[in-house]
Amino acid sequence: MSLRKALGSPIEWFSDESASDSRLLLTVSSPAGAKSLLLTARGIYDVDPGRYVQAPKERVVKRVHPVIRAVTIVGTTVGWVATAAVVSFAVLAVSHVISPRVVLTGSMVPTINPGDLEITVSTSHRTPHVGDIVVYTGRRFDGTKVADFSHRIISGDAVNGFVVKGDANPSPDTQHPTLKDIQGVVVYVIPFVGKLLNPQIFLLLLLAGFGGWLIVDSFRDPE
Image (cartoon, rainbow, N blue to C red):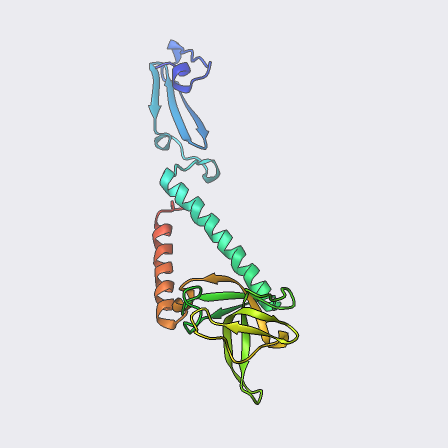
């Protein structure tokens, strides 16, 4: 085997018969891995460098399986994106720009189902209009609060009051909420998330996440 053929470079090795015991270990490394050749007077041999010399940790190039590398890249990317989304959501929620709410009733089926998580934007950042789904505070005739409802505006205005109705309800609501009664406009609905927000399922998800982390960690090379 010639050095030119082994390394693909115009390097020649000239042996000296008078120094038959001379040896040279040549290692070439790249992100794809490392290749080592033992050069002697008798010839050139492809060898494992670990049998002759121990390289410092910072010079060792570890080979990573393509599947593991792809999983690591995807996992890292998803993790950063999820972290950014959670941080952004938390900042907007603390500043009262948006607000999450789990739907408990079926008055807006099939648009919004029980267990869905709806995200609302406050009326100071978005003015409600006919056709919007809004969360408003339902009140009795004496003004006391009953509950919060997510219904669609079908007519009316912010001054005289909106006429609201659940998509699944046969008739409009008796109350005509004004702008002061409306907490926010629904801008996004995440299906089923509300059903996961209970202690049992949360614990299962936590255990599943921990188990997944252990599996991924087992594929990592030891330091």
